[in-house]
Length: 182
Figure: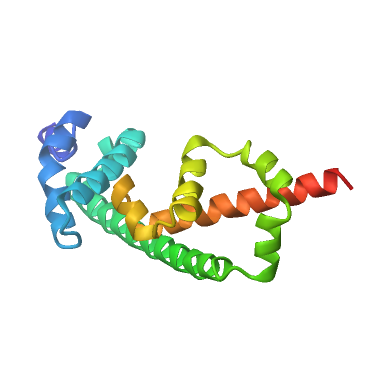
């Protein structure tokens, strides 16, 4: 009987107990990987959501195994975040390259925006207010991505990505309207 109670005390009886005893441990593990406090909070939350979603498994585990499992979960969450951030930076870089190609104003682009004013006006109707403002700031007010970013309090890269997507959306709509009128 003593062995059973000893074994039971080696497991968590509630999620609250599990959380209380391991909350600081998660932050210690994260401190070895991440410096940003808000990022630590986000990653810790992600780990705890996973723990709570699989609560039966964790409550059935030995406390030592729970700590080891949490350590692995923290490392994986941080690794996933770092990989996603790297992929996002790569996408932004690729988008910036494509955006820079578009902004070189090829003869095709010039013809698209000058000769097809009717199509352009109709195509603009599908844009959101924010998209219209981005395009207006760029073409009407000749603002740089940095200036727009400072004004909207977003990064220069984010401005470029949004402008690129808006221009692509506009161009695709103009092409669609042209085909519709053929």
